[in-house]
Image 1 (spheres, rainbow, N blue to C red):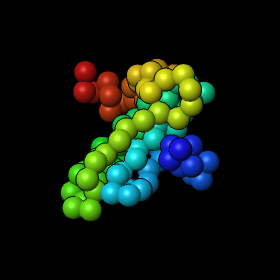
Image 2 (image 1 turned 60 degrees about the vertical axis):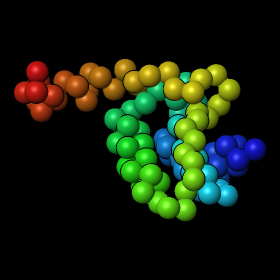
Image 3 (image 1 turned 90 degrees about the horizontal axis):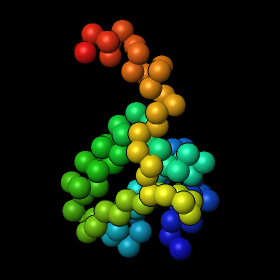
Length: 92
């Protein structure tokens, strides 16, 4: 299976590969049911732009690593440090 191969050959919270004109983006945080950190959101957006503008890519598949979840939502364990910054508070 392509997802298993991508997960086994890569490291990091977001993995990607093009295989037979299909771009695969794997959310790789199975311990937290692929809860998405800010880094994952940013990287996913960049990858979608990159693959979306590549004429060789015919489809983009988003999937999650592990057996339990695609993406559980935002990684709320980061809220206290990332959302309580001076920049975030100024935005509010």
